[in-house]
Image (tube, rainbow, N blue to C red):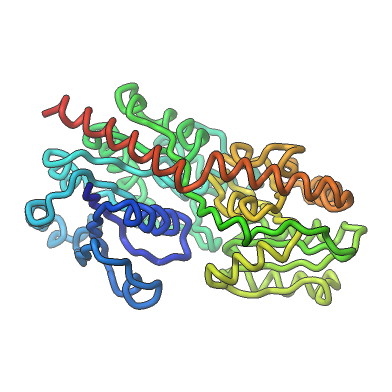
Length: 422
């Protein structure tokens, strides 16, 4: 089978892109062929390593240009659709997978040619800020998304970016347009919708009509299962090793993590992996709390180094404040036999079984987070049992094999719906 994959850029720092790269490698090993349409192919080819034979790349920057202020760009709508047609005729793919792509007219044309599946990884389809989090109230937004968010946003502090800067009027207008284009694509054009969790599906049902909701199917992100001899469960040392992995933005809860570390009574060493706009402030916070001898920042690391960190640590902590649509770092640690302590937000409870593979803590509560971390680390036997339970659960439920079966089912559904419409 030949898959057409449309995404803006294969930069492997984003969760969605890592999912794409993971399932792409697996599809190739299964003998399938891939066609990528990207805004920029250079990063994928030069820095992340080339795929094997059976892959075609097309750089189509204009296809991802959704500037509504530019008359020239609006005039190119027909040209984009025709160029997309030429790629379809040349490559003859069996199905299209759409990720970060919201050109409505191009998608409509594409859906007339082949079955189309739209993948949803986050809340950009229904939230102005894309975070579903109230900055002023310090809690997750539970309001049904609508045009009313325009004036609610000022009260709840929603009209800001992840780096805390305010959104401009132009950005707000563009985001509103993007949201409605996304809903039109999901409701009127594509043949199947892949939600990456039950929580994601629930969010989609709030904004889509009944016809579109019937097209939603849950496809969990793939987690690569290492060989058995790579995963060696060992008795934890007296000094417990605690890991945080993620982008340093306030939504990932770095402040809460450091505050929780300050409350621990056990001996520990903590490692924070990642980078972002909040790093300097978090480093200052560590100094202020007197934790410099116990806390280390590594910056971003490659996949091999991250795997080594999972293996060498006893516990992963995921203190996200916003509702994670999946939160892949948890299952990634679990596949190496490591328990997780995390705030109970979004889809996290779908892969973290409370008191079995780790502990769920009350959202935005560093005291409860510290209590659950200590509860997990204070019993060496239970820590190992939780790690093994996590490894087996992730292997069974979220492996690349499980993901592949879900993709094949989704492709069949998309093909059936395509034939029914044509």
